[in-house]
Image (tube, rainbow over all chains, first blue to last red; front, side, top):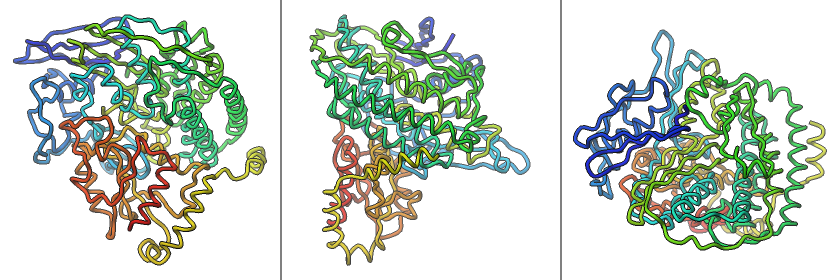
Length: 455
Length: 168
């Protein structure tokens, strides 16, 4: 079974540990007085961040975990504070004494460590990477995040679904429409409504346009990190045009506020003309980029994630599909009827992650042709029924999972698992056998979110 | 590669916003004496994200695309705070990032300025104050100029830089 998420909720007398698998949802009750659970990491290593987070959030002890270090709570975070507990209501925290974090490191003669971050040498989000090096060769890498931790889960408690929307769409700016789509599905479930086909197509068009912006950005940035700057100029031109297209339709360059239940109309001819231009540009880009041997020399066999490991670490999205794992939330009747074709590669290296994006880009263009609608009508969503709701969306990074529990009309527990949260944990597997100078290239080929991961 | 260059010559220059160029010509004259001494003809910016949604960063990256080509205005994003004149700060100044932001600020040589970018640092984004958020950034750093927007579009950021240069 594939592990999708694992998180805790607070009930009156106990904590409920919810473990979401692809085939079932498992629930376990633990007492509040002495909350303890057993780890899942022996079979699912990527459970460790979920479990460490659970400890930081609720003070739940993971009895036999191989790693008990804090995850979200960093060096100056006050001890014995479990902010997701309902009785925690502080609005400010006083920084505590500095408690050093012990990084994973490989010892031995001549082995040294390189610390990178949290502030990196470019326009990029903050996060920390700790390398164990033998000369140029990377022996091990640890990813350490949560510098951007804003406590979104806590922030949204007590709000209605509609009050929470402006925050949800800003959790990860690059995946805004995917987050909004997941939110939309929860609203539909909670109000027991069906979305008319035209609205669904309109929303799907926006989600594919968001994917277009990011795939184009990555198709430029990945070669740039291998020293081929011309591709960045080309890719960033195309992604700028896609962003402007998104603004033309939604009034916002990132589509904030775009997914709703209002009526919309589309200028179909302009859209078709744009798609044709982009189609031609992609065909040119492909013919050009395939023909640069020195670039593929850097891409091929760099940063390999083997299928077996991709499965073991429960990876999702681009990273999983590049290693041969056929996993995509769009692999369902609605998308299939509109031209979706699941893309996979086998080699699991930078090449594969680059090619997947190129293939998906072409497929996305085809789907967007089929998603264009003249208009979609507004709909009345009605009242929200209390309950626990789950939804999925496929962002440009991968599978997004959202769960919202509503009690007395407001959010009792908000949980979201960004695709990056699992994929970050598999990043270190790609490093051994590569030199540190290839790290930026490997990292970019995964293009994971920090904001969505940290919440 | 030959196909690429053929296309490149056919496409020509994409860089736009002639109105900004005109504005800049005027500003250049204004600041000639003042800024030449302080910035040696170019302004170096260190961008620091203190807990944004990454949209502000995406728009700053867009400033380098062929449509905006920011560097033609003599404004550069640099890799180290030690090379910078200005810190461009985005995000809600999270509890976890605060010490690192202050550290980066200390590393910038004098004279130095902080420009806040987007709705987050001034707490105008929909995010509410939680224990994990230390914004507004003005409580921790001297903010010389603010560029509003959620996120500010590339053209707003360019205009914001120009307004900052006029101000100091």
